[in-house]
Image (cartoon, rainbow, N blue to C red):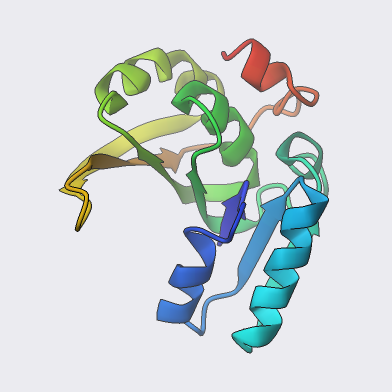
Length: 165
């Protein structure tokens, strides 16, 4: 599994604690957060956790990262059309991308249809739930990769955010 834009390690680190046999890659672009993730990995004594410092737009083209993962997760990185472009290049065929979205998930799914089509993704479903304590509504959007991602994706850094597909 790869957690794109790991930040403080959510959801990657809790999922690793829950499934310790899973191999996990945490991808984060900010150096300060990388230091925290390394410290968390050490203190929690987590094995098979790789921490990469850089951008998804770069790592998504590298051998060993591109089309290498069964599962990709992402939380609070951007709109669905943007993160589809960042995540799908990492997945093997039939791999699953899970994005946590808020109450406007339905609109984001509609806006991401073209991105999913261009990147060989197919909406597999969505799971609605309520967060404990806050009662905030969230949606897990599940997208399955159908075929290899065209080589030109992801586009160069910041372009997916500035001009979503």
